[in-house]
Image (cartoon, rainbow, N blue to C red; front, side, top):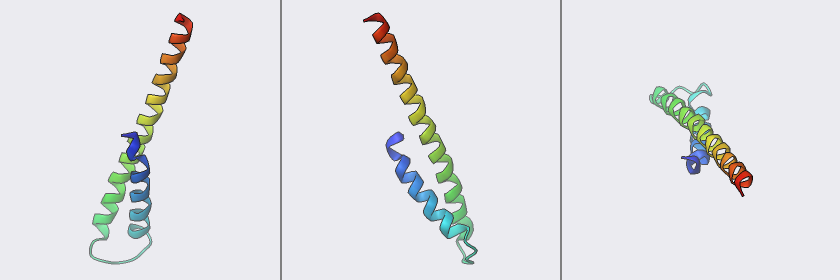
Length: 67
């Protein structure tokens, strides 16, 4: 999931610019929903990256103590 973080960031920025700049077109609500879902996916992806990093650090520390 963490390899998709940059993709979710780009999608969120583009859809935010299209959906929340005040332009009026038929698909504006769809673009706003895509922005919402991409933002949620971005947050989950970032949290996943943080959890994996902390898990790896904890694993290295326990190996150093044992070794």
